[in-house]
Image (tube, rainbow, N blue to C red):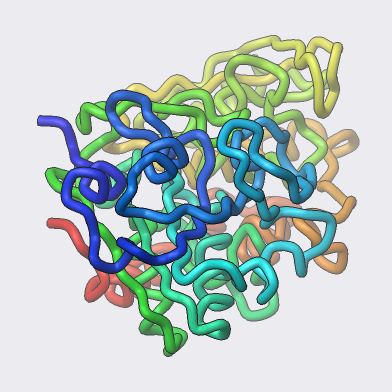
Length: 392
């Protein structure tokens, strides 16, 4: 049985929350049904709905912009609708302005998330919810699956002062929630005075992998080509906080990672000794066509997932950074440039939610020592989120 998304249910059943109201739509290329029809086309041609504006998260409505590349306001070439950018040149650009919301009655969110808190789409949603609450506009989430299941939670909490667009509020790196569940959580936790509704999925269960949903996979961003990429991302996105290449500019971003000076065999051997479950690191050489270390042969590893049920992506990502650091202390470097509009804190600390991972690696701590606080944080978050879960 194919899972029925919130978009599919909206088109099939309609919604009193949306019919006859002026609609703004936060979307990207993933907002499709099983016939690959896009939400913009479906809503713009359906007389029940009045679609008046589009809102583009990071990478844009049509998904063509690379990571951390600002997107300007424009007009959508296909629909002719105005497009308001929610990822511009400043941190303020991440939130819809009152002027953007003036010509709508309700803002609809339909974007495929990947289940990792670094991925900025759900934080775009939360910022938009806050703006709609202030402007007295309604908000509707068209829910979609968490592609790496909603059953697993992994990683530490975010320490106060380390919140950012890769972690707007504290939650583990792999949160195990859908967008609709996150919206319900934030509505209650923040006490937002907001007319919020979620059009839930039918047929999705928490332990489902995306391949079990029967739904087509569309790249949510230019460097998220497969669900395998999504599964390694909660750990390997940490590489963005270093001067290692996360293999943007190749066909296997985040599954591959390395640097021109790195010995992939040594890294693979060091990681294997750490006894990481569900994964085999294979020595590899890759040449990115763009981004870090482009046009150079990079030594490193490719992560081959052997058991997705036992694989712990965040632990694996930390282990990879530790191996690279310990083997090449003279060449390994943390990213020092501004990251997601923050220039006062190291990027790795924003990604990890605090200085613990960086300081632990620099001090020579084991992965077990670095991970010691995670079970407590995972348990606390699992309890916090429990009342907001929408699916069995």
